[in-house]
Image (cartoon, rainbow, N blue to C red; front, side, top):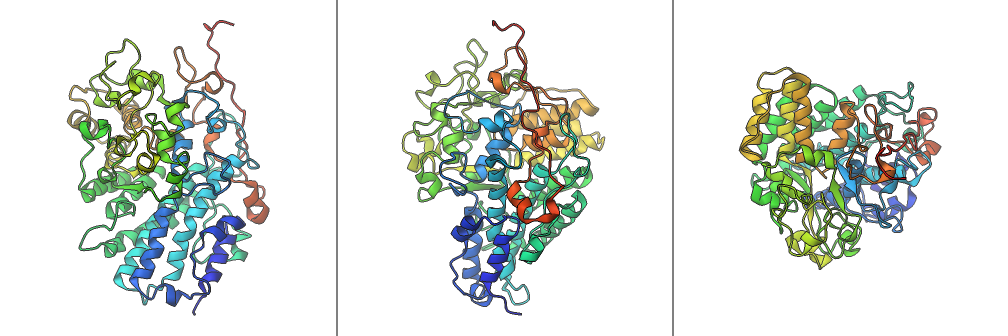
Length: 538
């Protein structure tokens, strides 16, 4: 039966983005009354829909341009990081992320979880549009490949949401009736009626849905390749599909499959871990998409770049004249994390050494910034081309969605969780070959797992992945300790995973989806008291 694409879009806009009318109008594909036959009459037309998907990650002002955290997926990465103990922020009047850092206003009626919720569902919209508009029975091979890429992208979004919104036990809030529940599933076939009574699904149901998307992607994504190669690093390829499976299986604690798919991702990517020169480059350090399995890339014409302030570089590159972080709030590594890292590990040079530290003066700053930045400040993420002055150049950067290094650490941890005797050699081999020739570790069991997670936290600092490990492994967050570089108001010490890592589904969704009423994550706001240094002067 022929469907009118405008009806498909209307159904998706009404389902679980929940009546975000403005966003849906702004992001609909300009088809008028075009039918799916017209939209998918050529691979070129479907390809145009496919390219809208990565673009959806970098859209400023979806809720309001007045909120300077409202600039897309990169902002959600940053949110996840400031919820851990790994990223400290020098407090200033310009720190728009304080509510997440201070665990304030995180309940269902606040704009902060609303931003997270809206962003994911608005990025889901072009994905479901493409899938729903393509008839696989009549599609070309290339079009089937585009659907595979879209389904891999959809899996990435759901893997994120499932892990962020799933309620897990913690030390401050109770949620017996929602434990293990994730989010509602919305597909290209979801109708308005379905959306009005669409419950949160269990971990098992979400697993089946995600793996179905990834199985299809695994079987078909190479059909999207051009002359045997992926079209772009901004779209998922076979290595990314394997990597998504590895992430999913880690969440499910199916460590055997996680280990195997991580290894498949490593092999399929053809990549090696970034070298010291690549990591510490003042012009290309962590802004070169070619170093990664999958990334997001901006160009000077993008709205997020034109804003100068609402983009990845502004918030993640301390070495800029145009960005927020270039003027404070500076982003820093947590002191306890930095202090634990060996001085012979070159990664330690990605943060400014404290005065008198062994590495003081060895950090490769962009000229002039060695005298501007505070101790422990990050120099990991450089502005594009090392351009600190012109946002049209410096903010037209890239950030990683998946690096091959993550797969090495998934493989290591999964092996350790399984009691595999090779786990230690996997860790030692990676570290001595790629990061620290003098590295040595002799622990086993839980000590080995903790060491792997520590090295992974260093490796993926600022990339939004530590949040998921802390939540999965029921790890404590410790920001209050002698010498801490966290500001007074955020020095929380938790007993196991923090309550704030169970993100609240928002009131606007519940208002229009009766299946969610009574199945809310409890509000974690203000549940912790900040640690007070007993040696501090009154």
